[in-house]
Length: 265
View (cartoon, rainbow, N blue to C red):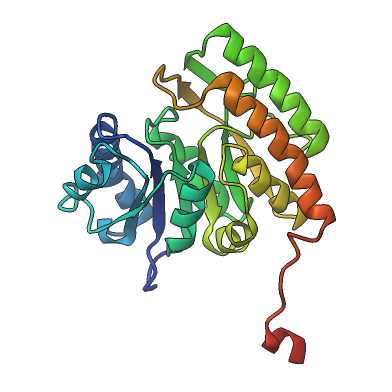
């Protein structure tokens, strides 16, 4: 299986965190409990798992709390920056700092339970997909605790706009649980520019642009009423960012720069 005989970690788990001192301990405990069993199935040691908490300008001691879990995770990195830059910035920083052959980013509240990774990782291991994204928008998805009706309605409306402007055929771009092959993550997040919540759309837009195979996977999902997303404020920002994505592409912002070796070859 991939991951054996390699100096790089098998899996990196990136957790963007902004003022998550209350929710983060339970999340890290759940991840640790899951990994104790999962690594046996993957035929790797716990020291082949890298956990990266990216503290996005927290003021509640999130970084200090995360560091207290260093005895549970042999590879635990806590990255902090200030001031708060946004989820897109935090995820990008974590994914580019990661070294794993596979790289997952997960919301700090684990609204998508960590064991849903069992459905996603085999798709990348088998070569069936380059990216697997958790989805609340498929018929088989299980919304165990739903959002308020108005948030669901606005989410569906936003997805319709996303399908028209950016990623047709993907039913849920915003679920915060996405898994990438390491080299794919490197390529996409080096080009990704948005710091806000629309970064997911930008990454998937780039993945489509470069013809990567994306598997949308139905998952169990539990709404956390303490979400940081403000429906109207962030919704308007995300609509603006959809236009920015298309303009960036038209302006060549997503063109990759060739190295000198590439030019000479």
